[in-house]
Structures are given as structure tokens and as C-alpha cells.
Image 1 (cartoon, helix red, strand yellow):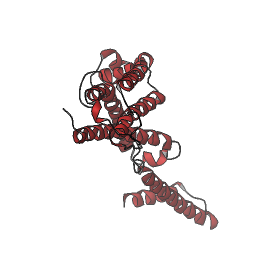
Image 2 (image 1 turned 30 degrees about the vertical axis):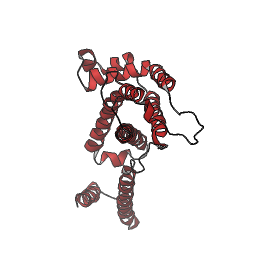
Image 3 (image 1 turned 45 degrees about the horizontal axis):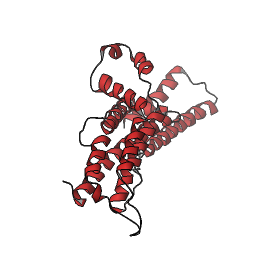
Image 4 (image 1 turned 60 degrees about the horizontal axis):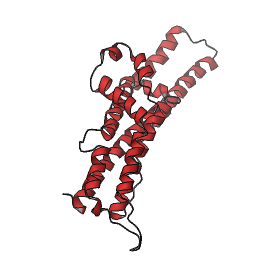
Length: 241
């Protein structure tokens, strides 16, 4: 049996799970977008950013599927709604004594239906998780393009599933004690500061090299291959420092 205290703990835990998925997804999307204007900076540590992107996407798929897995395991929406159904009397928050309860068995039924409406996206998410990231399916292991054909999963699909999970859980959080939250971690995109610092550093290096070339040309000399190599070597040595 759940009490108000243990139910609060359960809800906050599943909200944390959703928030982590949201934060990882937002960071992954942010890094994809910054490749448009910070690709050179990312190239300075290409291994790190490549592995980071792959790890984020893999974790997004696995963690998001846990929320929608139909097995009755803790952390899934189905398990959560079952717990709510058995503990409905705990969700008694009202702004006014005359108000009706914010949630009921009918509410739970509608939420389950709303999850089922996303059966195509959830099914494709299951394929990605079960046949690529958790296990290797031979046909997809040898042909990744086939996965895209058999189980198309778009950014919009992922966003809809994240938003739906948060909307459902947040509703019961409000009905439990009147609390409502917004699913965003303010420092999830701090890596942008690092990319901007790297960008400024590259700009300074380029300006220094351009000034050196201008000085040589200003004295009426042509830059020889040996001089150009010296300029490039100086930049490399500065980078290593």
C-alpha cells in the first residue's frame, strides 16, 4: 500500500526519469544544430563529440522505451497508472472543498487510450531499442538503412512521446498535492559555452596567422612554401601548449 509520502517519492522519481530523457534529447538536438556553425570546433575533438552524440542517442532510445514498455515494471507509465488506480484515494487535492477530484478511473482510462494512440511510434521505438541498442538483430546489424525503412522514428515522434509522458505524470502530481512542474534542466546546453570559447580561440589563431602573412607581404616579399610551413608549425605548437 502506498502512502502520500511514498507516492510522492514514486512520482518524483518517474518525473526525474522523464526529465533526464528530455535533457539528453535537448542536448543531442543542440549538438546536431551547432554542427552548422561550430563544425570546425567539434573537429578539434571529433572523437569526443562523435561518441557523445552516439551515446546520447542510444540512451534516449533505451530510456524512453522504459517509460512505454507494457511490462508491469517500476518506471513504466503502465505500471504507474496501475498504482494510481489502486491508490486513487490519495489523489484528493482540491483548490476548493466543493471541487470535484482532479483525477478518476475515467482519467486513467483516457490516459491509457492516449498512450495507445501512439502505438506506431512506440512500436518503432521498441524495434530500435530491442533490435539495435539492447540486442543485435542480424538484418539490421548488416543493413542500417533497412531499420529506417521498417521502423521510421522521427524527432517529432520522440518529442511527442516525451511530452505525453510528462503531461500524464504531471497531472497526477498536481492531483496528489497541488504541485506542478516544468520539465527543463537550465544548464543542459552548457556545452555551447565550450564551443564558443573554442570558436573565439580559433578566430584569434587565424587572425594571428593572417597578420603574420600580411607583414611578410607588406615588406614586399612573397611567402615561400618554407615560410608558410613555419607559420603552420607555429600554430600547431601554440595549439599543443
